[in-house]
Length: 303
Image 1 (cartoon, rainbow, N blue to C red):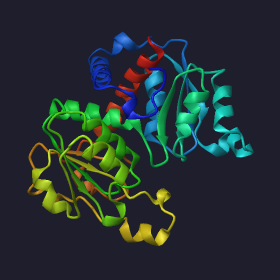
Image 2 (image 1 turned 90 degrees about the vertical axis):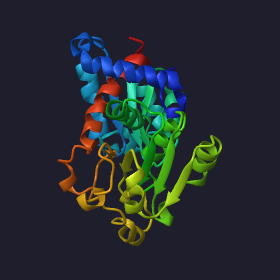
Image 3 (image 1 turned 180 degrees about the vertical axis):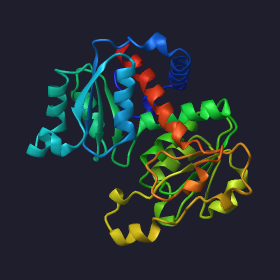
Image 4 (image 1 turned 60 degrees about the vertical axis):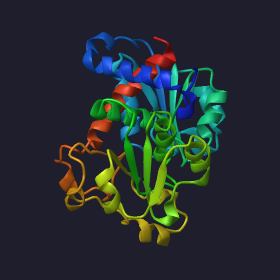
């Protein structure tokens, strides 16, 4: 595997291998401190990011490598009209591996085709975010011990949520997975995700509008924010943004070992009163993101 653009680029065997490597990194950090000595990652972020960009950079630094790149399109020659393909060909002269985030779907694929070095999709529009999915999977593995026979509730913006689309695709390949998809009608899961993944794979799923009614049967609750940047109409955003807010009273009937996740940033979908609950795993997800990106960088550089 040269690049990672879509979670479907990875087989289940490869995903399991990355998770095992990440777990070894967690257990034996000293073993990995010089694995990427004299290697450089370029982080090309055409769209704002805190966790993903810093996670990639921390991952490479902890492997003994170094970092270059930009944190907004305005800080690059894109502001002068340079194409993604030309930027990638230029940056590949300086770096051994590239992580790219771009607001346009398909930009990461264009980058991979243009690049002589491995490219990692760090999010392309509302399409895909495979390394967030790997972070999610590592979190589920550490919290639940595995991926089989879980009831997974995904709540919020299921239409534009690239993390949601990637997670459904990945989890659907494990036995006994069931999905409860919780969203307003305007933000329900796209038809192509239902048809190509859920229906084609005979994966049990239901679409519901009420979060409280769904919570008691969930093993995992994956909350997402309604993404202002994906809306063309601000009035629609304002009408929908507070549809689901997770508060302590809504967890009264939840399982004791419920795993509450969120790809972050949150706005107000999860009350800060839940942060101290032992079931809150969203900041653990952030840390797991660094470890799984370390494993991925090693795999793509074949160290």
